Image (cartoon, rainbow, N blue to C red):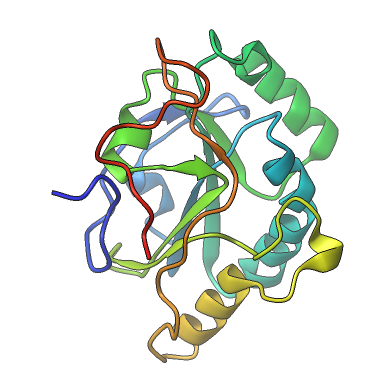
Length: 193
């Protein structure tokens, strides 16, 4: 079995606390036509470099029934700034247009096969995976981006078309796994394409 969810797989359920004081599961997003689950964090330069592009995408598609859930699964022992208190501070400062939740146990990252920060998973109304991978081709410096894969996937899917490039390799820092070296990846984790 592949480490990362495959196209057509159903979104695994979860229960995660968020910076807004609520706890979320898959049913919390039942009203969304499309659900974007993405693995993110507080510190990664690929995340902070592309946050404003992700914000623009989330805002652009909000009125079209797309909900965004950002999940921080990083070990706070490996990277202390990724703890829940720092997540709350970051959200208060940045006011992102998505739910920002904590996966301290890393069970959600394992269930989805989150490889990097950021790593996006786009699910249709039935919560089948229609896109997985990067948001943009240059997340560390979006002034140099040439393609926004997340925008394209959402646009195509909402237009009733198949996603033309449904898999890309996420670009970013690896998820910081508990009890492992900061650059460790699970043995069965691999590139998507």
